[in-house]
Amino acid sequence: MATGNVGWPYLLRRALGFHVRDRLRAAAAPAAAHPETTSTELAARGGARRVPVHPATGPVPLHRPEGLPRGTWRSWRAGHVGAAGEQFVLDVRGATVVGGAGWVFDSGRLIADLWQDVDRPQERASSARRLAAPARPDGPARALAGTTASLLSPWAPNYYHWTVQAVPRLSLLAAAADPREVDHWLVPEPIHPHLGQWLDHLGVPRAARVPVPTGLGHRFTAERLLVTSVPSAGYDVPRWVVQDVRARVAPLRRGGGPAALFVDRVGDGRRRLLNRGEVLRVVRERGLAVVDTADATLAEEVALFSSARLVVGVHGAGLTNALYCPPGAHLVEIAPSGLSYPTFHKLAAVADLHHHVLPGTEPALPWRLRFLDNVADVVADVPALTRLLDRLLAAPAPAPAGEVV
Image 1: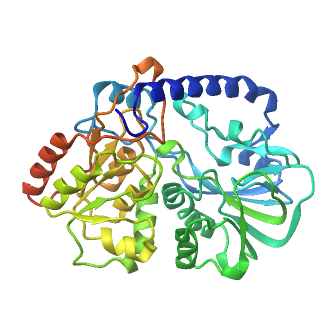
Image 2: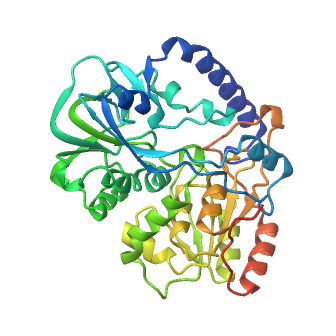
């Protein structure tokens, strides 16, 4: 391949760098680990109030998406948990919050169960223990008087993570305290307008927001801290999260929009669609509206997707908008051959959507060398896309997908 990040030299360099870096991180992480405690231990000692809100849920049965290679499906099945832990609110005095990820420490000990790590190989590299290792709870900190609520978490500025992990935390917090009593809201620095729009929509007062940049350069000590567990850990989205997000955007829904959408990625340097022109010709000939959500407002996105029965796009956070589609809609994900996240498959399973995967036709490494290349470009399988679109567009209005084994 002459253009794009899909050639064999690129793949081999990336694979070597990924595997070496992963092993170095794994070797260094234990030495940098923090002393830990849990919300349960704190509550048992009388050092905090722990309020359970949602019980743990069992695995959501998954089915193999049409078009997904057997090897990818085996890796999904091997690493699939599908269960969400108990969701709770922790009300603690004198805690320290470190960095844009919102690591919470009590007397120098990391409250480790807030992030609900998943013990499986593909998640260990991004576990809370490893990510929090460089954080330092000691040192100068900004003191926050009164009541502080934290909406910080790893990757929170990302549209997917914000939607399924941060937005539902408002409902969790409301189970333990009146949000109107909160004096300070720790929120991610609004590097994208959707964050501010969501906070406005959620009723978080602008004057009470404390934007925290990514990184570890900011520390806060809170007289009283309200913090929740982070739902949807390991891409295992509880059904109540989908219901909560859909209920919150219900006033923004509009009818009469396009029934079929192609989510374009214009100007994004990652996961470029190298045969974009050919794909655009195919989707436009079949009546799909081509949309770019990069600059769309929250209200525009909800209104646009609330009528869509078919959504097509390259793997990316923009596909999170399929949550706003009617149950039973089809989500077609064009995925780079070297990227095998089950993100949208798991989301579709609890959102009653039909999920289809079209792997790219660009070179892919053997499974022993495979790595999750989140930036690689993709060459869409146009014949396969054409056949799938023709079939889906000719079919009657879809029924909800439900939970299919």
